[in-house]
Length: 63
Image (tube, rainbow, N blue to C red):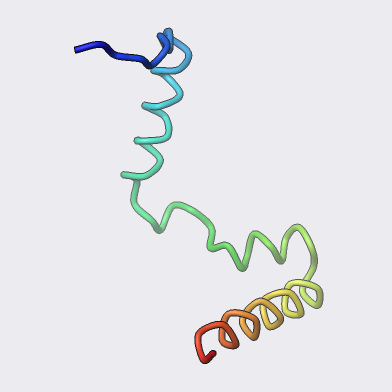
């Protein structure tokens, strides 16, 4: 059978292994998304964003 995918090389393999490793780590190691947003955007903007996105999602689910 012919494999049409191009060769990935050592960098591609190493990157794939890093991503797989990140998925298998204990979830408590990573800071929650809300806290990462607060650190980047500040408290007020983070709350506005999360509430707005929550409303959009709720509207899609109920329609």
